[in-house]
Amino acid sequence: MSFEVPGLHVMFGGTYDPIHNGHLRVAVELRETLEAQLSGTAQVHLVPCHVPPHRANPGASARQRCEMLALAIDGEMRLEVDPREIERPEPSWSVDTLAQMREEIGDDAPLAMTVGTDSFMAIDRWHRWREILELAHIIVVQRPGYRVGPGTEAEHLLSTRRAERAGALTEKRAGRILPLTLSLLDISATDIRARVASGRSPRYLVPDAVWRYICDHSLYTKQ
Image (tube, rainbow, N blue to C red; front, top):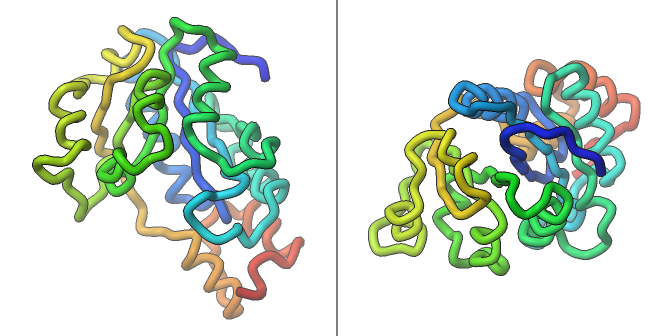
């Protein structure tokens, strides 16, 4: 995979089953917020998970989820569909994806992955989590109702590795943690699939191009 040379590469993974406006709003604000504080640009890689290790198989195929992603971000600067995980048959561990990205962009270029507060709270249960901090920074998108508890590994990491501004992520290749507050729309892919299965419309929860794709391919009509 070829890369431009932005100030920061950011992995934004998810099942995207389907991609919806909540995902897209976070991706756009993530790029804009980072670039407002960086000396360069931020390239956001939307990485659809192929074989989720912690949940049931998706309702749409890997190819269909990639195609919906491509429709959703068409024309949006510095957001790109990154299909590397769906091209691997094994479970989609973030550490493997980051290792591959690190190999491609080089040892010195800054790299980050984005997670929600709920996921970050359980960082010490992530697969090979210590290696992730050697490969990349972590951007923690604050989620209402979730708080990193005292005495936890997550709290220790925040206190020792916290970045106060996005620009700090370009000063090192990896290892810092940046909390960010972005607009979080109360939309869930689970709810969208349930709406479609019950004959209700998810329009305005997903881009129109994605809704047309769901209809054209009869996706999610059975749970």
